[in-house]
Image (cartoon, rainbow, N blue to C red; front, side, top):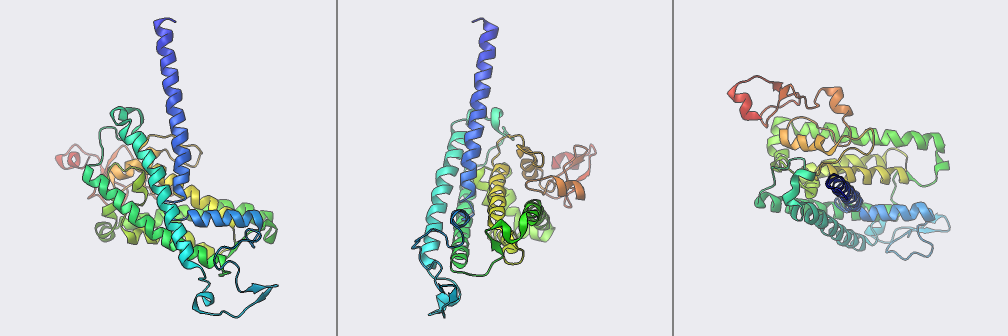
Length: 346
């Protein structure tokens, strides 16, 4: 094999290895997405209900499951837990916590090890900001914040799963025939747009100066985030986003499959957004990872998560003819002029 052929072969095999690593990383990120906000148990239970129907698994003995229902009738609650559909709450919270931490530390730890430790010296091949890494102090803080919020999310998810499994009232449904195929198909893009609108406007609100300085500035301490950065934020901000995403469950009829698909998709891409790994979009509506990485680098622009739609609509998409810094609020930057103050903001 000649020198040129050998070089081309080496380039091809390196490219193949990189693509394989990205594919494996993406798959593991999808797994991490089910645990990073504690929703793995909700995801699992809803899949079971979709498969077996609302009665869940035939002969299931999960604590509290379907109690209060006998031959289609309702039995009078025996205690406070039954009255509020909280039978077996300790079991569900414990399972949610255990599973969430295994996923977070197992999968998240692998991603950090593979990219940020094993390939740190080749950052130019995969990193959005190859010349910048978190300081050891910030790296530890990002991990601690992510762990704390994941624990909070796991507890809340355990409570929600308990409520749903014990017959608590939501608008989730499991048979497409309940509302028809047209409603089902329309609900898919509608739910996606709602999630993105909720993420964009709540995120942009966090960039309002008083809220930014009190809450969101903590998340922007991580100017070159890693996968744990997806939930490394002030708990108030974390709970706000969690509340907005799960609110429709109680007001709008939604097929459980649609709900859990967009729930996991949103978490999955949020992790990719914060991974710092240079990845191109898989779908036309997705921005590349550099889109949100630039948000951390330049602060007040690119507020969307999984789409550029709302940034384009409101003029907050980063532009090369504007300059941005932590003190330039509003999302539209400032005129780029060759002044010392402008250069300082770059």
